[in-house]
Image 1 (tube, rainbow, N blue to C red):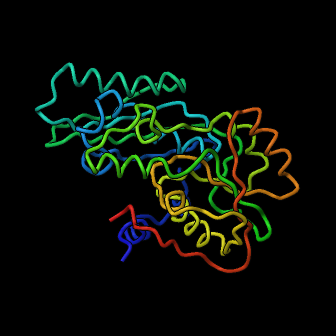
Image 2: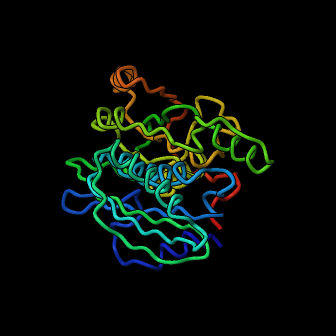
Length: 273
């Protein structure tokens, strides 16, 4: 049983649920957890890195829906072992990302806990939300950046090895400049948080399509979670415009598949449960 899907299916009677965020009256509301021993280990990251990444992965949901983040609500479950200096470092990371995206931190909650857990809600605004539903047969699919490094670095960390401080596993590179320019040509979009093939399975289910792959995808690229690159679809006629915007935004684009009749099932290890 896919417990994530089971929980989501039975928790809400709203048709809004199912995208990276919920669009209501011009605003997008999104929320993600960032929990110790699930999303990070303290021996891997310092507190500033933890705070910065926790905020960035939440901002990513807003960006992928073509929404500009405005406000953040932060719940922090803090263990007694954390010192005031460590809490200040955590806050430094949270505020670093908030400052970069002009986000006001307007509230939240703090509780005591046995480990460090963060939950962040981002409130964003958009005039043209981009959903996961909208991909049509014949349209092309592409992703931004390169895929695979987060999985390789995660495996290195599990093996007790060190990775570069510039690793996307520590600080995802969000593609907001590209997204806000290219959104008008996109039929669907989402961020790649659970791996390319897992996201393709979700898109397949939502849109009732399969894929004709135009490029070979390595296992690392297919299965690497926590990439936070954009996965999107568009009409082939708009490819020159997409490429022009990608060049302007200095964002690499890989066109890798075409939507066709059929379905798609991910063969990668599940990141949830």
